[in-house]
Amino acid sequence: MPTFSTIELQTSPGESLTNITDKVQQAIKNSGVKEGLCAVFAPHTTAGLTLNSAIDPRTAADLILELHRLVPTRVDFQHTYDTPADAAGHIKATLVGNSATLIVTGGEAALGSSQSILFFEFDGPRERKVHVQVLGMKD
Image 1 (cartoon, one colour):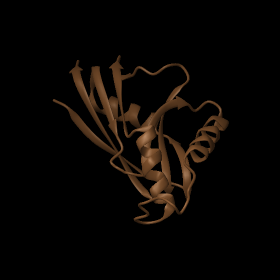
Image 2: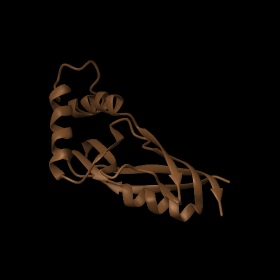
Image 3: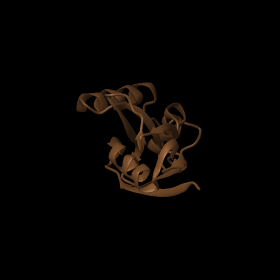
Image 4: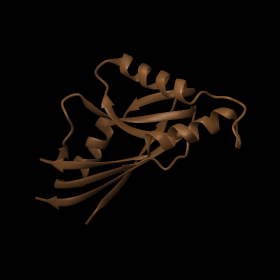
């Protein structure tokens, strides 16, 4: 039987990356699944998920700055529902994506030695949610 949980976040103003690896690993542990899959999903149009290094905090700064360079906040977007930052956030979320599927083995996500699960905020501050569903075999 799959288990479902939700991680709640309060993000910083503007753009930011939040390491949610420990929270996802805890959701996997709580599920009791030893071998299977874990789906992680951000149900937001101006946020995303990525797997990358969290060892050096400058990595987060580089990722944020490079996405901002590629998609700067500007007023000539066709859609500015909330603000120009909101429009830029939609495009950045499309580029980054909003989900990750992880292999679960030994009761935890099989991440690389420097990989972390990072929540990307493109239009903060906001109250955000990340859904986690774990499927697989228990003891």
